[in-house]
Length: 81
Image 1: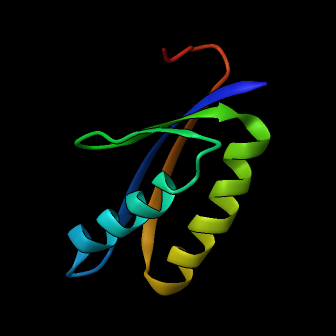
Image 2 (image 1 turned 135 degrees about the horizontal axis):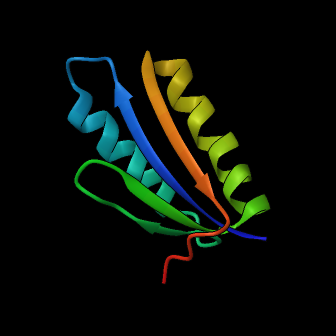
């Protein structure tokens, strides 16, 4: 199943800009997903299994390093072309 995930990541740190940049950079290394960075949130498009595998790998590492708020919206009915 193909899904779109809108992701907003808010590190609760003084250096939040660099942390967000590093997070987006890490997500962009995964060729199995389509990442569309935005000013306030990013959209990830791909197969359900691929997206959740990437999120499992990347979110955990960042959440262990930095206190943060992560907001996700998941849709299988809003195609992003």
